[in-house]
Length: 331
Image (cartoon, rainbow, N blue to C red; front, side, top):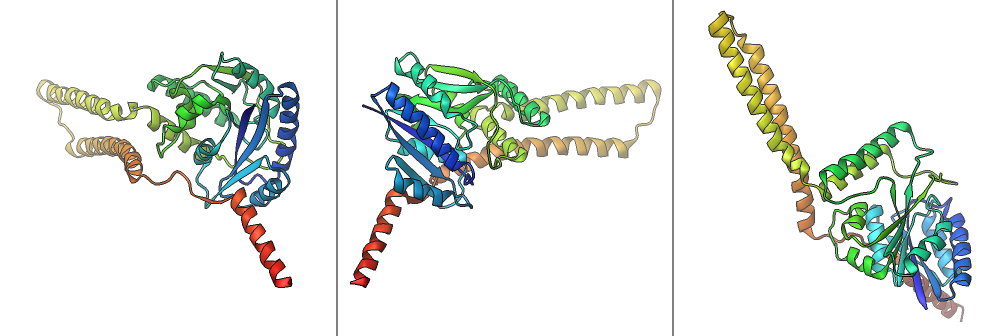
């Protein structure tokens, strides 16, 4: 028998979570009939949700023994949620997918067919359209992938999703990368392994709203650039060279204008412009160095990537203890 662990990070998904559970159990039930060697577990990661997500997970765990969950002490982010899921998944195969049904469970049988025979170590989906997204957000997303692939040695496929069906070998390789500042899209590519991309049209959420804002995605893209490229550090040297060249040219022009044409050089405006230019370049370069230094500082702290406050095991045990205590009181 082969166990498939379905890892599902959740943040404020109370509206769509019941629909997701119904769909994932339907699809995996059909897969179990087609592939009798497969069994499934569903590992939900509650990333500090502020709605009734945890309550729903508790009820699902009570009625379905295949359901497991880990509830964080606060919101640590989706990257921490995926790492927690991969770390605690018991399966021979591991699936990572969102709970909002934008990663359609109906793709799982096709994904398994590619991984099953050993030809591929991972099957994933790739969006070929961004239907439902704003034009500005889509434009920035495409530019991010182009810039990232130019400045980094790690290739990230445009439109590639976190929705992945992976072998245990690939998952173990990912878990060896215990860095605090995580960018999973880059990590999936960096570890290598043979990957099959399945193209599909973008699917909109059936309920609820996304927790990803434009600013959040922008910061996430900066995380990816700094995690898998040192090109921004070269900007400081490049700007320094350009500034020196410009200063040298201006110096020659000023000398020629003064000696050959007798023109007076306005000292105050020139000085102010030069000061603002060089100060701006220095602050910009210092900011880049500061970002990399901050990432290094956070790594050296060796803080945990997440903190779990509750699991389905601890919840059921506490519930059992309370029931026994109430029974003793009645007696």
